[in-house]
Length: 289
Image (cartoon, rainbow, N blue to C red; front, side, top):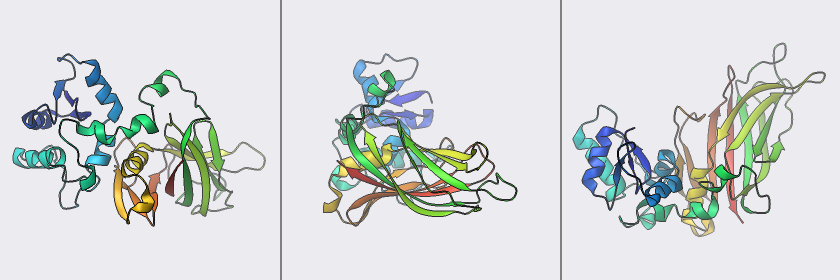
C-alpha cells in the first residue's frame, strides 16, 4: 500500500488512490505514506479509526451480496462506482449513521475514544485498569468440531478465554473430538481492551495439559457498532456491523454483528491456529455498563 486516506483512516492501493483523489479532500484526503508531510491531525485520524478492517465494519456493514468489492482486475468504472457509493453517498451504512463529508469517519467512530483509548493508552501502558470497565461480554462457547487428537485416539478438550488479566474456563469434555459445551462465560471489558484470546487444551490427569489450538477475536467491530447505534432495546432486529474474514485472522467466514430481541450479538466461527485441525463456534453478547 503506497497511499492512505487521512480523513477516512484507511490504506489505499494505487488504483483506489486515484479514485479517492477524485472525491476531493473533504471526503478523502489522500497522502503518500513516504513522500508527503503528515500533520498531527492526519496521524491522529489514522490511529483513531484503527485501520481498514475497522473502517469496513462500519462503511460496509450493509453491503449487499450482489455488490462485490472491487478486485485487482476490476474495471476502473466499477471501482469508481463502488468507492463513490461506499464513501461519498455512504450507501452501505445505516441511513441514521450517514455523516457529512467534512467530518468523515471520525464522527462515526468517536465512540472509540470513549469506549477504548487504546490508540494512545494501550501502547504506552500495557496494564489493564480493572477499575474502568465500560461493558461486559457474555460469551457462549457453543461447540468444537474436528478437534485435534492429543491422547491415544481422542482428547479431553476444554476452552480458556482471556481478556487482559481476566480468564474464564469451560468444563472438560471427556473423550470428545466434537464437543458441545453451550456454556456462557462472562468477562468485563476495560476501556483499554485488546483482543479476546481463546485457547483449547486437552486435560491430562498425570501430566501437563496439551495445547489443542488457539485464536484471537477482534472485539472492535462489535463494540464500535454497538456504541454507534446506542440502546439496542429501542431497535428492531437488524445487522449493525461486521468483522471481515481475512488471511490475517482466524475467521472461517465473515462475522456479522446483529441486534436480536434487543441485544447486541455476534456469531463467530473460528479455525483454530497453530494446530493440525479444529474449529470453534462462539456467540458473543455485548452489554454496556
